[in-house]
Image (cartoon, rainbow, N blue to C red; front, side, top):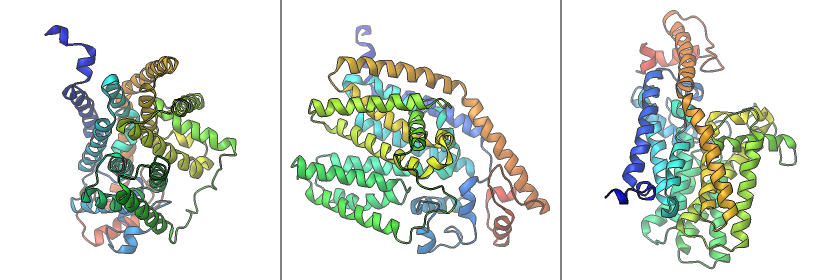
Length: 430
């Protein structure tokens, strides 16, 4: 019996992997529970304005532009939250559960038996506390939505099936991706380019109806997204890849996938990009015919890299330091683990050595992040509590207006309108 308990056998058992994920998730739940503060934060206040979808539901307010996004799905999710009294702790719990669900969906479609231990590495990295901002801020469910619907689209488009349900999904998913987050436009177009490549270059037309429906829906979703689109006035000009400023931002945002936030992140980002270029070169040189898992990894890598690319185009004008915001972590990390997992499937001894060295380096940096878990969450708790005290002064004494720790503009008008409508939200009771 003991002879069968090898490292390979252990890593191939789903129950052990899921227990590992559950253990880390419980740690996150604990820190979220201890540090949660019943107060909306940042853009969530925009959802509570008088003309918002939550208070004035209409087709216009549902699809109205929010910065560069059209957050229709997020608004629908928050409409449910609104009915639940805007219980921040409950929203954080739902938000994190959905994130873990997406991680498991990714693992189930990309996990290979030859390197099953990579699933543990992927889980350990993607559950890093560096992603605390997305876990602690329910508004960030938009990021989880765009990633999940991109994964679901990849699954539907790459599996060998021609069911009517898949055809329905092919119509729905492009709109779901694009109306989750603005960067979803690039994800849909990456998948559309894949369908063109599959049908016209690989001559694989087994799912032509499903593929055509996705392409038509993707074009329609893109067109509807850009109708009456207005560039946010407070955003900087687009920084094109011809400028060094772009590459500083882009390499920095890619570097988050290494499990570390640092001002000297440029080198880490370049290292990941060079590794990626090597994997691409070997795939082309050896004319590798990708199986389902490899295709899933490749499309995930391209879509997430495309999202990071568009973020740098629009945000590099803020400076490369902005790229180190923890909220970008999950895009960067899904890109990194997809490329790394793809690299391990290739028959190259030198690449295998480089991959193992990269894994050990990233593990070392990620362990350092786990050591700071309490600091990450408690730091946000302190900020939110200051904001809550400020809001309580507005509610109880009608003094003050701007609570800079939680929102850059005035809150008195929003709070007074909620009170005048006698809307039962938990933070208004405190």
